[in-house]
Amino acid sequence: MSTFEAWVEAARPRTLPAAASPVLVGTGLAIGDGVFRADAFIAALVGALAIQVAANFANDVSDAARGADPADRVGPPRMVASGRVSARAMWTATWLAVAVAVAAGIWLIAIAGWVVAAIGVASVIAMLTYVGGPLPYGYRALGELAVFVFFGLVATVGSRYVHDMTAPLSAWILAIPMGMLAAAILVANNRRDIDTDARVGKRTLAVVLGRGGTERMYAVLTYGAFLVVAVAAIAGVTPRLTGLAAFLAPFAIGPNRTISSGAEGAALIPVLSQTARLELWTGAALGLAAAVGG
Image (cartoon, rainbow, N blue to C red; front, top):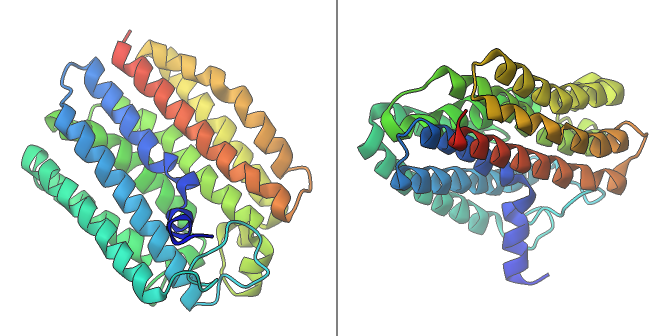
């Protein structure tokens, strides 16, 4: 693995749809409402991706420090634990990514005020304390809840808010399925790592619930997201056309079959990327439908 490839792997590109998708939804709503600002969209997208990359870098180095990435761990290699990247270099890269997010945030603050500053500060704190600090909440079965809040509610509503400083009900409602699918990405990751996480004392929600409970939770999150989309559109609380995104639900069948089939280890690796793609497709579909309106 070259140095460039090592850094790309450390950025965990499979997780980036969790950052981009809610921005697409919020932006689509802004277009449909006639308040779209191109600079707000670009800054929101750059900031979201930068904070996600920063989180991935921080998780890599923090997990390595806690011994949570043993040599027999299944899944994409971790760069610090494997010795490919030093802890110092990873922390430097983390803060560089945060700096990019801050630069985007400053532009958004100029547009939309102190609310954006509060979101930015909260996001950085959540990023640093997920598996870092004295009380990492990712080790206390709170990771999925945090992902739902920050990659669902905060990201979707915030991406809509920066265009005209309003947060309509439709943004809050569509934030729910985006948060559910983002949380499902983490569930897929933690289901794969359930044995090694349990052994090193990393009490993820998957470790707490066990295999069966984790598989049921994954099904609720993936299928439930499309149920929310359909019901909201039928009820008229979101643009009617957004209901068409519910037709993506069959694409959740494959990863659900895999994760509930008794598969272990490497056989579960594709579920993570499949779930990430599903969220990206859903975010793009919702954003496009919201932009068209109706």
